[in-house]
Amino acid sequence: MTIRVLLADDQALVRSGFRMILEAREDLEVVGEAEDGLEAVALARSLRPDAILMDVRMPRLDGVEATGRIVASGSPARVLILTTYDLDEYVYAAIRAGASGFLLKDVEPAQLVNAVRVVAGGDALLAPTVTRRLLERFADTLPGDPAAPPPGLASLTPREREILELVAGGLSNAEIAERLFLGETTVKTHVSSVLRKLGLRDRVQAVVLAYEAGLVQRSTV
Image (cartoon, rainbow, N blue to C red; front, side, top):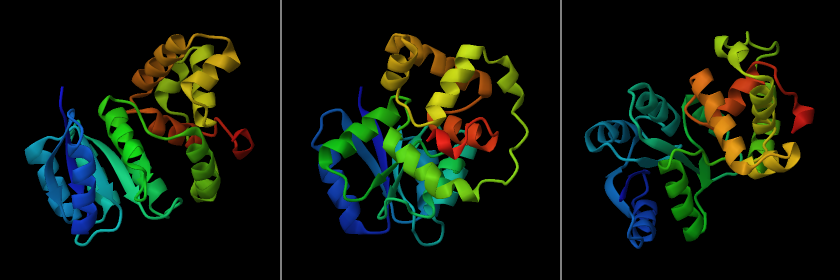
């Protein structure tokens, strides 16, 4: 099955470079290019891509707002934020808006291809080390007092709650499996159940929810 990709970046050279990398793979197809956020929103609606590579800083409408509009529209497309800086000030806002992860613009070709495949497959691209640094950087931007626990939190089993806290701590499924002496497939099933009960798109949103609800502290990371 071919993965349909939309490129959103105001630099034509960046778009052409990504297009060359992606279209060299048989399972990837670039179906459109947007040079600003408004165009990205429109093309996401008309082209219905599986994944969108979204630059943060674009004219007319930035990548954060564009991501929010695309997610709010009910689009099935998964958004990968592209940033020049490892801890861009907009990255956290983009993740809260519904992005499924982020990449640096100087990413290696193989990593770019893998990232598109990962998010198009329904998983989130937020490596454990990135999670730790991201939350450390933006912890002070979170509300001072924990938000009220979401209604679905009470429906989690003790094991699911434990796994949610470990996900929020930046652990991968493999690391969680090792820590809890479980099979990786079992962990993946638990994570899927947590996301379903809490009405979340992916584990990136689970991390944000856990922090905002006060389930984990910075020391966990």
